Image 1: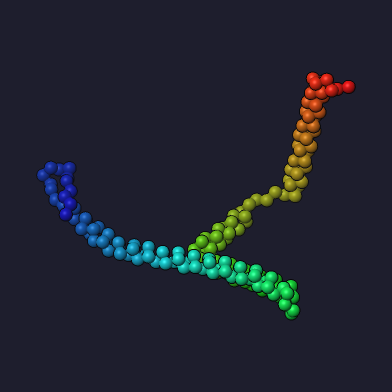
Image 2: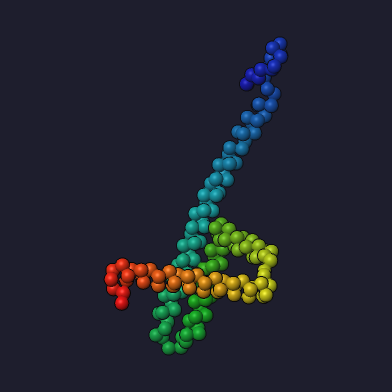
Length: 161
């Protein structure tokens, strides 16, 4: 028991809620350990899934080249088989924790793109022409500076005619 002191010196006693909190913590510790073990097992399973998907892709690419010499396996069939294997590998990866995070990120990015206010065609053309004009002006200024420095260096070194 923990003794809790009161601001009033004549009142002394223990905190009645402390045993309940202690009991709650004692009950939670095994549950937290079980969750940690489940998460460790799922992480291991995710790594296995990612490795399996990598094996699928490597086998698909190897098969693509292996069957190129055999008659009857046209380029179309080999490409379709490779695409199917890659889609299968992507499907396996998307079932992992990191795959779900990537999928959620892509879906949220798609929602954010819908919120973007795109410029009108007139604004885009005006801005593009402004950029081209500024690039031309800066290029002209740099060319004039380069030419002026070349003339100055030739005059200093006596190479100018």
